[in-house]
Image (tube, rainbow, N blue to C red; front, side, top):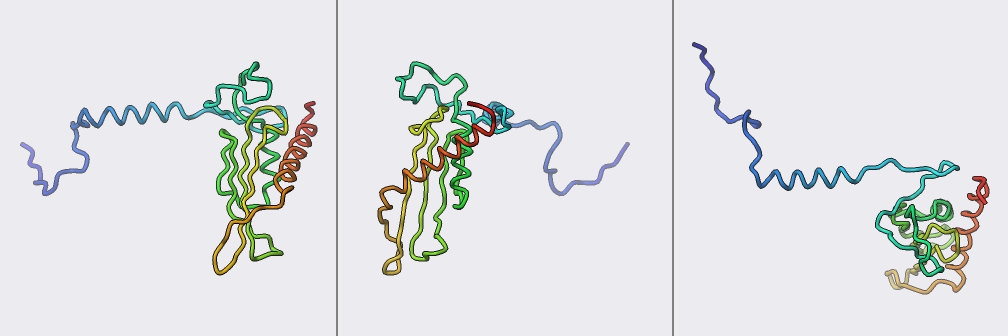
Length: 177
């Protein structure tokens, strides 16, 4: 006969006990959802990751949708060009799958009473000007508060042109035409 010392508190993980049935279903659902999330990124010839957008099911091009995006996603050169062009600003969010870059407020060193914020959307796998949409927000400090003010008329087009120029340079450097 073996004597066991009395236990004053139940153990945290009693052996032989199982989860109640209503806790199993949410656990299995969570595991199955997480299992579908992982995949290794694919890379193009230049070594840049090719963004994958599984939610995009139709071509957003100007050709009326006659050529659907087979591989889905955004143009890797436009994505990298946008990141390079906007790298002087702090990023609040950058999502390569959705093709969205959101910057945080940036105050230029020369002017302490104004700040800028940029959103950039890469809309297509095509390297075209209509595949990039840029919005610039400007605020000035007046009466102890930040007030929204319009940006110069050419600011958005200048930033878009720089993104496209950088994307074309990246494509040329990679050896693609």
